Length: 146
Image 1 (cartoon, rainbow, N blue to C red):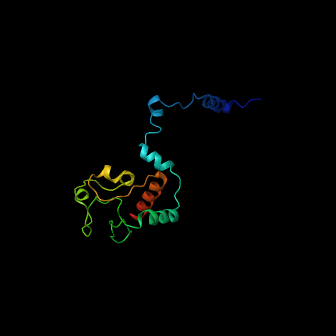
Image 2 (cartoon, rainbow, N blue to C red):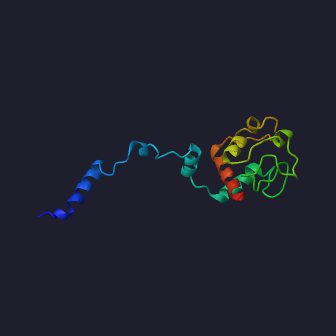
Image 3 (spheres, rainbow, N blue to C red):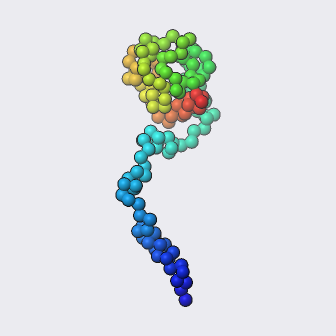
């Protein structure tokens, strides 16, 4: 004997399985994945081992930069969120002094890929072509800027 009191639950279950119950309007389905591509890339980015990222930073950047002291290049602690060319105790190129952007992950990626294309006339003669290495260093610098 079937329990008629739960018959509506059975119907809802069958309709849900078939895709009819609780149907969303078409416009709701179109908004499922609207995050900017950069944000989606970060959400899907592999976890970065910060110890390895720090070692990579020292290997790739440490000859000219330090987190806490100006060297050939300016100090990097707090670089994410900082106006480009804005440290008062560092002698930037005229090109970087005139830059009007704030350092963020996207700008750092452009800078490390090809500094001259981002800021023509700048003085950094280094490029980091490996995307995974750039990503690790950028994530490390983000962590050091909080």
